[in-house]
Length: 96
Image (tube, helix red, strand yellow):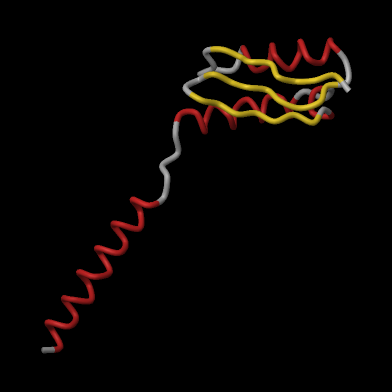
């Protein structure tokens, strides 16, 4: 009886652990691209001072937020465009 309960407990733990892993969303390629773009934008001393949001869907990066001048908008877009995995950049930034 104890052995049966132990086996049932182990099976239950395995099933819960296995299905629990399924509920976590796997890291997608877009997540990696988004992370890379954000890191590269932050590494730039001028661009990192801007308030920017980055989203990625199927390799298409959308930049949103406020930019203080046109040269920084161009710079941020260029950084995003040259990030590996980016297929296109949509610039939805606004000048403040």
